[in-house]
Image (cartoon, rainbow, N blue to C red; front, side):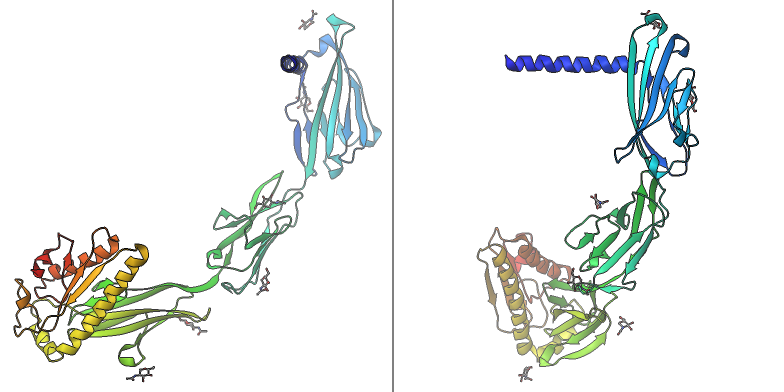
Length: 459
Ligand SMILES: *[C@@H]1O[C@H](CO)[C@@H](O)[C@H](O)[C@H]1NC(C)=O
Ligand SMILES: *[C@@H]1O[C@H](CO)[C@@H](O)[C@H](O)[C@H]1NC(C)=O
Ligand SMILES: *[C@@H]1O[C@H](CO)[C@@H](O)[C@H](O)[C@H]1NC(C)=O
Ligand SMILES: *[C@@H]1O[C@H](CO)[C@@H](O)[C@H](O)[C@H]1NC(C)=O
Ligand SMILES: *[C@@H]1O[C@H](CO)[C@@H](O)[C@H](O)[C@H]1NC(C)=O
Ligand SMILES: *[C@@H]1O[C@H](CO)[C@@H](O)[C@H](O)[C@H]1NC(C)=O
């Protein structure tokens, strides 16, 4: 029952509210209840009356309540006459019967609430005085001048070692709101971005690679649209990051690159860094360390089959004083037709070379195996058949007897349901053989990859 009573009461009050507002909005209307005035400009507190002055008597006041609470009556008026407070005589303009009030040359003291109290009596309804009351809020602001941005330190900074302070200031403007943009994206506070109370200062501590960019500040207030400062570039020295070695002419499995004998192969070393890295290529084979070339590119050509070389690419950023290294192993492992000479050459070093290749390949496979194990704790069988050398030089597709004397047959057996990448690697081995028409096998053969053409080689 109580709930129903409450609801009814609510409905009643809502209806009453609508009724009252409708009734009152019938006679006067104020288009703007909040004014953002500009200092020095005039401001009209406009009032629309929805009746004809011929059929009514009116009487009213405009009063001003300062933000401090001080209240003053500015104008008292009827249809025929008005009295303006002497203090405001030159500051205000009121022309009865027009109820609107004009404030000339706004100054900060003019801020506050302006209240219109209006009594209306219709001639055909003498004795009934309708009371109207409206309040208009006025703020007075100085437009914002162009913001000026400053960066400290002004020079480029080193990642993780420096802090950067960006500050923004305006010569003129009240109630200024500051905002920060990097490459036109608004910035908010985070664990490295600290803003001052009024957002006029941005403190970045410590600075990182991703802070690189063009900074601007934006200043605005209620009477000024967004005003952008000029852009200031923040340059951050960083890196090297993501060092990578790449080569198009060779087959890659992890760090092991397999190249054709006699072919000129380029290796490209790349790392992300500012300023650009300097690169050196270092040979680390045969227990010696030797710089072979400076610059990101290494060019090699090997004739010997079964040659294994180790290289190191070192990228160094001379500003951050940081460096990174990538190790690669080169295996000369396959040959195309018309390279018989080199095959014969290699015959003289064959047993040792074969062992080297074997070892390297085993290491490669072990690496793969290990990777697979870490991802999927399942077994991978890998076995290597090292065959006795054959006298025959000319390779044939048909079987073991035709394989090059130098090398064994590598059998890489992967159990179904293993990590995709391992199978993919083995598959690409097989593909290499078929692409290069490598009838002889140095490494073969993947079981469980039925589409592999070299599968038959195992038989
Ligand atoms: C009242 O005065 C203002 C300016 O003084 C004017 O813009 C407005 O049209 C006037 N209203 C009427 C009803 O005359
Ligand atoms: C009084 O006059 C106004 C305007 O002419 C009219 O809208 C209103 O209905 C009249 N009121 C009465 C009680 O006659
Ligand atoms: C950077 O600011 C942190 C505090 O945020 C301070 O501990 C550090 O010393 C400052 N580093 C430099 C280089 O000014
Ligand atoms: C400062 O900027 C943040 C957004 O980056 C905003 O949420 C906050 O209100 C601003 N403070 C001031 C005082 O303008
Ligand atoms: C840093 O290395 C660049 C080339 O990568 C070179 O131009 C610059 O002079 C070096 N600066 C110093 C201080 O060694
Ligand atoms: C290889 O290098 C290690 C350490 O650098 C050294 O102890 C060893 O004697 C070297 N072996 C040869 C054969 O030079």
